Length: 197
Image 1: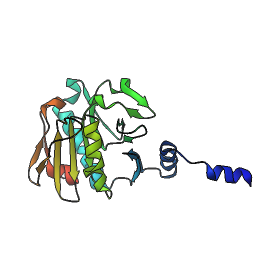
Image 2: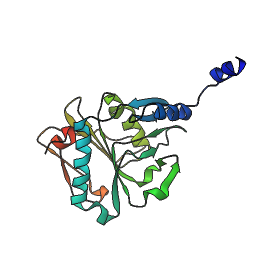
Image 3: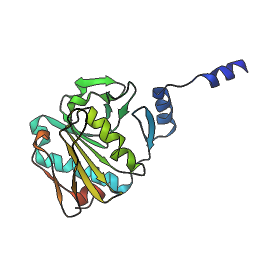
Image 4: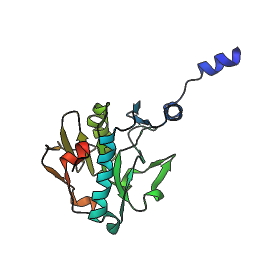
């Protein structure tokens, strides 16, 4: 009985709690943002299709030819608090990003050229804490496909840990990928929001 009480009295660190939740909830994305544990359900079909079509667009644009690569669900170590990390839906990274491994499955922010989040049920994380965390990590381009408000937001050029106000795009428009990413590419808002061409 004493052993059981001792186990119950042991307080988990956020990192330990995140590891436990990841194992207990396969397919869910567990992140620590600004010292807060968050859990995102698996993506729905439109969400997944948006990411697939994003990858195809970056392939056609020649991202590999300019020393880049795109990845889905790769951990981004955040400098905000010691245990903070995010797992963006989609990222464009330097081709040698694996050399920037920090810990577990997380990589240093300096190898990320662009991060894309497609909102789910916890859309407020993508529009609040992640904007702040990615700016503080100096991610040069952050795109949010905000399905809750039916628009796409483009954040660029963080300074002093903050992004300027985003440029907003509506259905029927395209989001120009900034030159800093390395390719010339316009991403249709409809594709970003629901995977449609």
